[in-house]
Length: 149
Image (cartoon, rainbow, N blue to C red; front, side, top):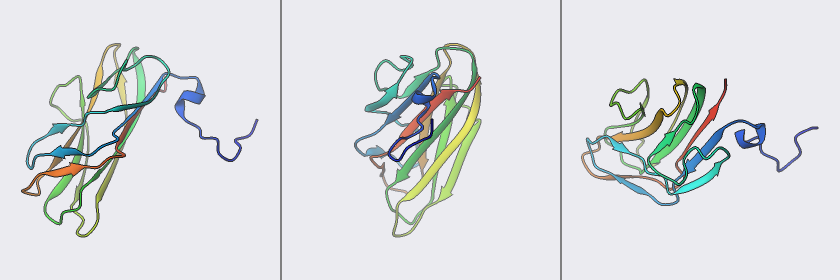
């Protein structure tokens, strides 16, 4: 069976444990503060991984999980923008992506990696910016995780 126009190959269609969370509104980020992104929409969750939108994804089973996250930061020409994966709310960040601010446009960051999890581990996405003023993480941010093996 081929993929037809208009069909999307979401992990939920691949018969694996998967979840995708997103934001429908901007989230303020204080300059110099690492802030958890909170999710207000559960786009799909085929294994009751989250239960309801929140700041963290709870992985229901041990294994190798893949994740991808995207955040657009409000336009400002000063400083850096960062996304940091915080497993088990540990304050250590094995996956980080950082970009300089973009003058005259939003700064977009996508982060992806794999994580070897024990059952019950959590994944939280944090954002950081140091523009010297509060900036928004814009609506449309999303965070997806799926079990690979």
